[in-house]
Length: 305
Length: 300
Image (cartoon, rainbow over the protein chains, first blue to last red):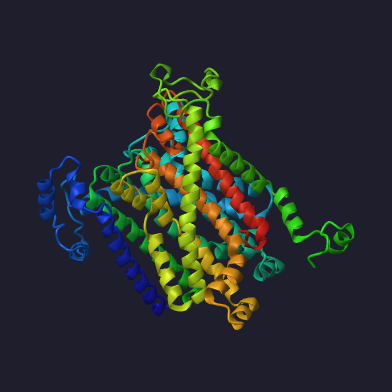
C-alpha cells in the first residue's frame, strides 16, 4: 500500500511539473508576450521597455525556472491589472469557488445516487426511464443556457432567487443546480451500472437466501460495494467542476476564481491566467490522487496496476 | 462464394438474415438512434443548403426592424423567428449558425480523433514504455482545465473560427486515446493478429488491416461524443466572448447577445439555446445508439 502511494505520488508530481511548464509556456503562444502586454497602440520602445522590465528578454527556460522556483514558495507573481500578488488574489477568490464546487458535487451525489439505485432496483421502470432521460438531457444541456433559463424563471418571472452575486446562501442555489447537473449524468450512470452488477452477484443471492431483509441487502451489501467507484468518480468530477465553474460564475456574477479567470483573460492579465490554470490543475491532480489512494485502500486489487 | 445470389430465397431460408440485415433491423428499431440520425441529417442538410433556405442575409442589418418578435409571439411571417438587436433575421442567423456548429464539431473531432487514435493505438499495440508515455500524456491532458486553457489560448492568439477549431482539436483527444488504447489491448493478443505477425506482415499493415477494422466501431462512437463535446465548448467559448467573433452567426454568441435583453425578450436566449440543445442531444443519442447496435456488450 505504501509502495502504491509513493508510486502514485511520484506520478502526480511529474504530471504537476509538466502541467506547470505548459501553463507557463501558454504565455509565449502569441510569439511576443511583451508586445501582447503593451497593447496594439504601443511603440517599439514601449515594448522593449516592458521586455526588460518583466525579464522577457532572457531565455524562456530561465524564466520558467525562476517562475517555478517562486511558485513553489507560494509566490505566483504580480497581477498586471490589479497590481497585487496573484497568490493572495486567488486565495481571496477561491473560497467562493470551493463553496460552489462542494455544493455542486453534494447536489449531484444527492440526486444521482438515489436515482441510480432506484433505476437499478427496477430496470426499465418509470424511474429508470426518468433517470436515463435526465442524464441524456444533462449531457446535452449547455450550462450557460441552463443558467440563463433558471434566471428567467426563478429571478425574473417569480422573483424567488437573486440572479447574481454571492452574499447569501440563496445566491448559491441556482449556480449549484447548474454546476451539479453537469456532474450528475456520469455519477448516475455509474451508480446504476454498479448496482446492477452487484445485485446480480452471488453474495447478494446468498444474503437474500439466508433471509436478510431487502433493505439490508440493498444498502449494506449492495450500495456499499457499488459506491466505491462512484466516490472516486465524484472526486474526479469535482476537479473538472472547479475548472468548469468559470462559465457558471460568469453567468451568476459569482466573484470566485473562475470569474477572476474570465476577467483576467479579458484584461490580458497573463500571470493571473497562468497561475489560475496551475491552481485548477493542481486541484484536479490532488483530487485524482486522493481518489486513487481511496480506491486502492478499499479495493486491494487496484494496488497492482 | 461470390457467385451465389444473396437474394436467392432458398439461400436466405437456409442462412437466415445476413449480418447486415440484422444490423439494419437493430438500427431501425432503436428509437434513440433513429431520432439522432434523423435530426443530425436534417441539421446537416440545413447547414449545407443554408444559402437556399435562409429567407434573409444573416449579416444584413435593418435598424428600422430591430427586435421584432417571432411569429408565435405576435410577429409577422416576414421574420418567422423575429429579429435581433441589429435587425438581423433570427431564423437566417440560426440556419447559418448550424454551419458554424457542425463545422467546428466535425473538424475538431477529426483532428482530436487523429491525435488520440494514433496515441491510443500505439500505446495499446506496443505496450511497455510507449504505453507508459501515452498514459502520462493522457494524465497531463486531463489535469489541464479545458475551458480555461481554451479561453487563454484563444485570448492570446485572437478569436477566429480556425483558432477555435485548432484549440478544441488539440485539447479533446483524451477520450479517443483512452478508448482506442483499451480497445487495442483487447485485440492485440488475438490469434489473427499473431497470425499476421507470423507471416511477416509489417507493423503498419498489422495495425491498419488487422487492428483498425476491429476497433473502428468504438472509434465512431467516440467521434460522435467528442463532436457533441466540441460543439458545446465552442458555444460556451463564444458565449464568454472569446470564441467565434461577431458578426459570425454562432449559437453561443447569439445567446450571449440576447442575454442583455433577456429581461423582456427571453426568446432571444431560448431559441438558439434550444437548437443547440437539440443538436447535441441528437448527436449524443446517435453515439449511444451506435454503441448499442454495434457493440451491445459495452452498454453501461
